[in-house]
Image (tube, rainbow, N blue to C red):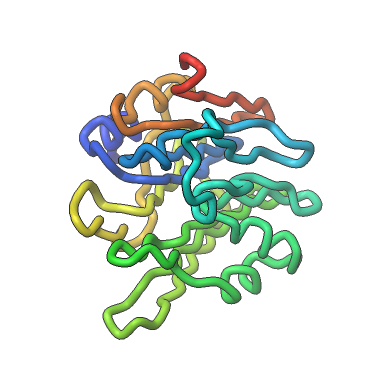
Length: 212
């Protein structure tokens, strides 16, 4: 089983990523453009949202300002876009994902990745992908739980490129680091922007613009 820190340190641009494990959730964002890099995570009443670090540099907010994490009753929803709100408004993970598709950022057509963590520790992960025919492929993976120290990783991209190559295959089983700061340190220093870590209910936010 690969270490999460090794996987991240060997990939300069996985893009946005989600890891779900036993009492552990990570979500991070990365960026190549000034607009994407100009962000921080801030806490909200029911989760977190992205905000522009410098409002004067904000260009198009449509795909970069959203709520990545929200509660839905006794469940936790984590996504890489505004589909978080769709899922919470519908009150159903699958129905929310079925109502959405990949992002309209031609030529990358960034996939939408999402997860829901249930009170009993079971969880689902979804990815909505662009296909060559323009249709959307919606994949769902359901887990009854995870062993201690083990997580399931999915990201938007396999790595850097033009266009960016979409994540392929099932979420990867990874060995989790001892501390969230180890995962943050493993992300590429130039491209990482922010990271959310929830370990046994304790939330830590890492923001490059705030000196983390």
